Image (tube, rainbow, N blue to C red; front, side, top):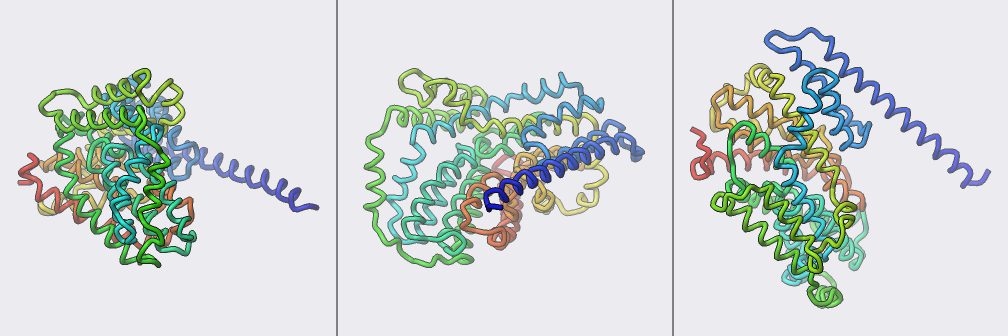
Length: 484
């Protein structure tokens, strides 16, 4: 029998095996849901709260095992809430899809698409790289900085996807081999950590921030775009500098200088030609959006209004990056949007069923004995640890933030401080490749291993926990979130 025929027989068998395993996971998930429906209700807990815990357990189990596509599992949350009698479908859909942060995220995602489609992202990257010179440590630093800054206003996954072709092109030009080159490890981690840390600095950077802001709004606690940015940026700028230093120390590049000068970068820029109308429009819309978001306290424009305005301006005939709807439809990260919607539904159920309050009163009660100044650190560390099992920052925030808000309310702790600690920590677990799509994309090129990420990730996760806790305590009074 030929090798081709053998492979043809093996492939269907493997496919059938995976299908059978996923069917088993699907049935186990339904069994978990059913189990929580018949279990005796603990003292002080409502039956709806126990069933909500079952929906959460089933959702997390299907997310971990990828029984269904992750966004599809998120959309099954309203279905399970309806079937179990926790929330009607009309209510969960209306309050999830109808949340004002959904159009906000659509606008942010559209801006990400425009950056890529117009070529603006690539041009900005090359312009900044032209400033770095040929010293490798500076090149890694510039890649980190570019990813960090762009990701403050463009989603982290989009920034990684934008940066990857440029990184791979550079690595191939110096014959840096996957799995062997520390330069390859360093550059991949630079764009990965840079885009993640930069994304946490603004509400528009990562979807978990959108989740956190929405839950804060529902708790009648307000934080503006500018306030969030003012609190988060100093914290993650410090973590970013430490990350860059760690990359260079743990994975020292095998070369100190690139074997070519700035002429290669200038050649790439020259090849792109003059600025196109779409690039100019995208840059103008981007700067306008940033200005309106940051001045929201004064202009009184809702951040969702600004996002919808972005979509309209990017579609102006003749000058916008979007010529037709398919330009947006084909490249928009709809999965991220569905995750946010599912997260809203989970948080809504946890709050309205009484589950969040019960967990805060019982499971988190021992933590309340810690001094007030240590509360942000305890929350950050708790969330960073339990988020290890999630395959998205959004899912981690969806589960953790409602519980922490209830915990803060019941114990008289500053809600905004602890909710921000939980939201930040949902995006700073760097230990496993599977924790975010923005980790998976660079990993797929083979330049670093699971072990490489674990080596630096454990240290960086702990450093982030300390930095978040210290930053929130230090920024407490000026930011209007007193910790005393």
